Image 1 (cartoon, rainbow, N blue to C red):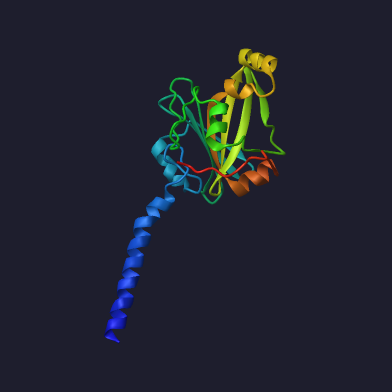
Image 2: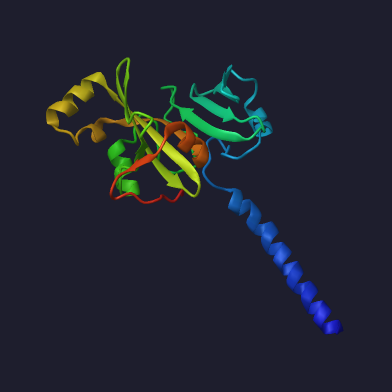
Length: 208
């Protein structure tokens, strides 16, 4: 009887140690500036005072201009949970503030992303895949990693867009360069942006 109780306590202790050791690893996932979807609002305090604050429906929209001039945006629900994070290029540094290695703002192309992830990802029926900007166009391609929707925003200047149109429909990807990255709660974006439209070759990505 004593031996059985001791064995049981050893098994429980090992299990607890395993959970404690593994837990931080399970939390290390998709991050922008060491912030993750699902984090609490208090985690944002390390960024200092906000540069801008707005409202969307019942959510708070917060914005910070970082020292490297990149812009970080966060959408917070009434329960204080981060639903959406976005890191946008400030054109002063190629740093993405993203823990996905090998990406650089203004350098990484949409072609690079296609090669890395094996497809062009997916879009949403209620959100345009291509947006016209003051100096060209912005393309938006999304993938899912675990239960987080990762969107890469790539920008093409007006001059390069004209070249791409002359070269053919697939040429835009080599001119489109990374301009922003967002991470979002999957249920939140499905509600905001509608059903997904997938590339036939699509598969989930690994964040590493």
